[in-house]
Amino acid sequence: MIARVSTAGALTLAVTGAGLVTPGAAPEAHAAPHAAKALDVAASKRGAPYQYGASGPYRFDCSGLTLYSFKSAGRSLPRSAQAQYGTSRHIRAKDRLRGDLVFFHRGRSVYHVGIYAGGNKIWHSPRTGAVVRLERIWSQAVWYGRVG
Image 1 (cartoon, rainbow, N blue to C red):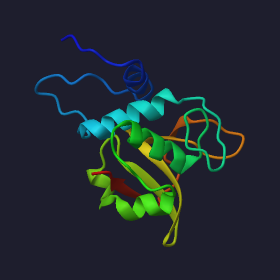
Image 2 (image 1 turned 45 degrees about the vertical axis):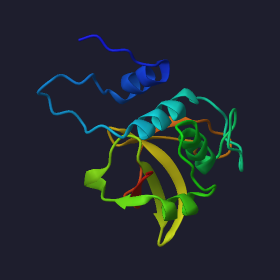
Image 3 (image 1 turned 180 degrees about the vertical axis):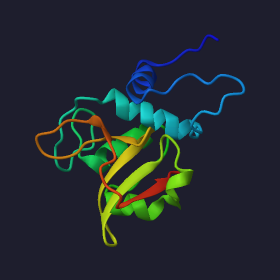
Image 4 (image 1 turned 135 degrees about the horizontal axis):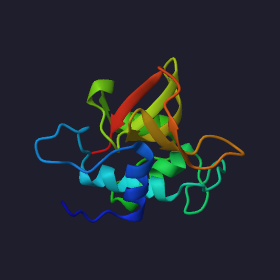
């Protein structure tokens, strides 16, 4: 099987351990094309520094990265993580797909967002002094949302 994969797509495949789909296999379900593109964009920003309030193209905070990634994929999102949660279609953990948003919360307040990369990992811009990176989901206090 021959497949063309973008550099960011290849990076996402390599880092997440995902493979190419073989007929008859049962891989992790595929995201919609815009979500897959947003995931590729987020992965291409690996190493970009965190800056509070920044939404790219060279520096990001958490919701700035998701906003930039989905805008590059042709979808609009509001600026804050809480507002992004409010406008996304809420889904259960068992229904999550690569490219879905992952919202970290305390009680009813969302404080962080990333893009699900598969394998229980997200692309995100975590905090001051850090860079955009792929990281394992570290909390069970998460909600998932899908961008339409």
